[in-house]
Image (cartoon, rainbow, N blue to C red; front, side):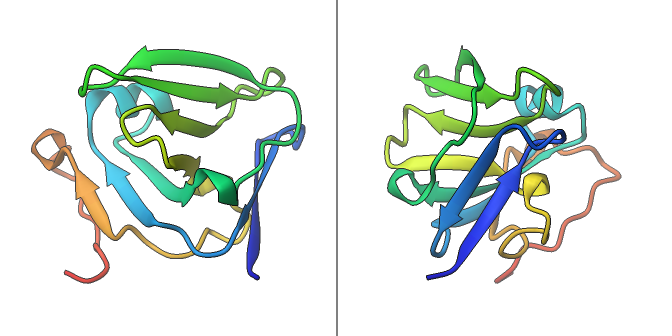
Amino acid sequence: MNIRTAACTCGALTVPARGEPLKISACHCHACQRRTGSAFSAAVFYDRDQVTLNGTSKTFTRPGDSGQNVEFHFCPHCGTNILWYPEFRPRYAGVAIGCFADGGPGGPTQAVYEHLRHPWVSLAIEGR
């Protein structure tokens, strides 16, 4: 079985992910832009049973557009947001694609909130 490990900047928090992801998503919503400090977020979504959070994390919970919460896990040392659990998709665990040293399992298979995409951002979505 293929195992990829995501890690925070300082290495104190790791997330081994086993097997293939459910999807890889680019999100252009304003909340993801603020969370990442970038123009969009890129996440690899795995089944919760495929990931393990190793190390001590701090959490931040906010309501998503669905009205249900999203729980984010951050490294308390370096501040990297590495993993999150969306309540509206209880099977899913999102892992920040930039935390994989090998670049992750591929590029986005979907983009969401494209109406909020910065006009200078252009992404190649696999399968389009």
